[in-house]
View 1 (cartoon, rainbow, N blue to C red):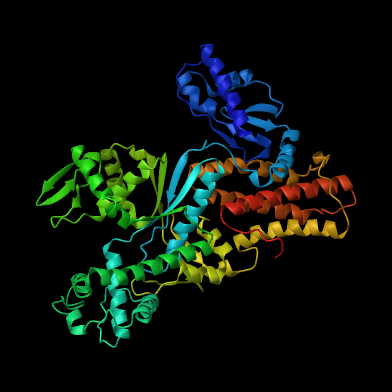
View 2: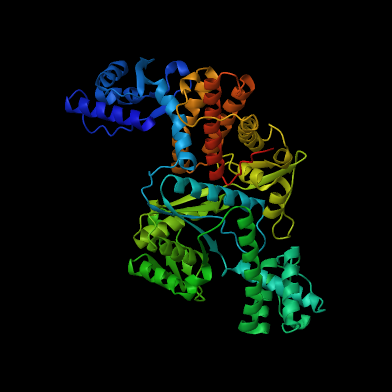
Length: 583
């Protein structure tokens, strides 16, 4: 309906231009929004107010000129001009009621569209370093990314979901060395574990597997392990200390044996992450290895392309990318004086690879602490000849856990954190997925564990699921009474009370809310819509009987309830949340 009204207005404005009543080339953007007050119609447009000044006409006069040229439409009952020049549209009652039949006919497809026209979009999300299990902070990015990908697919885009495995950086070497040190302890060596090492119990588990499968093959005397190692904090420097231990691990084990330790830690944790995400209802089409960028020469290719384009210079033995020429605050090193490429160089190569794979749009979902990386990555794309606007960065704030009104403190390095698996097992997958997308991703989020566990209408996901369970209960009662609800010829005009009219109007908004959520990258818009729909339904359910003696009224109400249930299920499915039939 919104698109129908938009098209009617566009045609009227075109006719006004052709008649020279308004200037051509105004570059307007027609806005049609649902009316909040039923007395003001079903939809309204402010186009006359927007174009009044450039058209040189009073808003109400322009509104009248637009209305005079609006083509007749069976779906529009009447049109009124209100206030300073708003155009209000009243949808014909038959049109409103037909939405119920359309919902039931389209079933799971209701809300889907072809707006994206098959355009290819990549959504890369989570991409946490595989240095430990996923924690609750990663869960928000996982839920947001998965829901956004579902929304984009729902409106007609071809979506590829990708996880970037950071398997080549310093943090992974800290993990590998931490695993080796725990292994040495299991071998009987006396080890002073570094303050900057990974201390979670999962490191012990990997070390135990290493020992069980290899015996003492990788055992080296502790005095050799700590030979010429810089002192640890607090008296020394924890960063130098762990870097020296990593260097000694390489030297004492040799590249082959070190690679076995490193790969066991890496592969174990990647498998843990993959399994936890799958259990959370999040699956990826691709797992891209950072190491493959070096192995396949993509980093060198990217640097060479930048050099050929004149965007790299040498200073103090290092290669620098002129990112300031593209809006960054300072130039960035891509190859250090020791010949090693930087993590940023890997980022450049990875994003070059993304666009070379033919994606029209790339969406990266990053933690809010990565805000400073946006300008440099976009700068590199511009320097490589891509359109930097084709890369979108969506930032997701960390989620704070609260229990009994108190914040739960966490530290990933010490291993003192709540894992995503623990959260899912505690509050349930549905509550976890739903709570994570209730607010804008860039807003701070306080995750109330007590509320998420609660089985009452105070819990928003329970409130939605209870609406669907009530609808299923009505259908079961009909079946138990032997009542058959006809699928055809139902007189929906019997749905004439305020609750029913509000429900029907709200149902009609679902497709446009899905489109808005996808295009604005804001899944919480669907959450808000579903909460409003559930509120409309519960109010209606509490005020009226469904199984009544009047067969026509009974069938009409149960048909409307079935349509509500279908939309609830479609919306919850987009968020990876179930719709139980009993609660």
